[in-house]
Length: 193
Image 1 (spheres, rainbow, N blue to C red):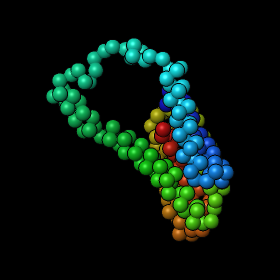
Image 2: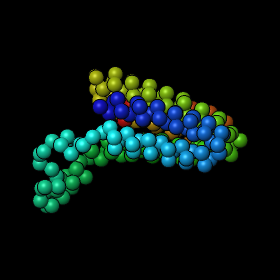
Image 3: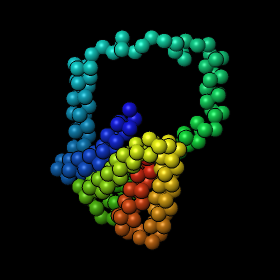
């Protein structure tokens, strides 16, 4: 199910900045807040009127919350001592941090380089496309070996990170010095998510 959900999430990283750039150019920065409020009200109405009662949709079974606290604590401790789990969790956290750091900080960098919101929104399209390509490639690789998909994803993250570090020193005033290495990181994220 994640292989279907995460590509959709990846596309949202292109649509949101692109739409936000147009809204900002038309109605200013406050327009994005009005749009988000209206969008939130629309989603709330969809949930209230069309989702229905999910109380009985969850199957009954043994929940972690019904187990004694000592047993729950032991299961959490076992999980935190599992090096394979910690390795995968560290990789996913690194992916998330790289992606979110970029989406939060890059508008300030692009603005300082002289780009307006509408132009900046278009910079995220390539990011979403490479994320989507990574997700599709992960589907193919995971049919043969999940470890291979993880290895390719980590490799893409490392190559993208090193390329961004080099580009920052060599081509500091070009937006592509930031965008192209980030596309490689997004490809790696697509492989790993």
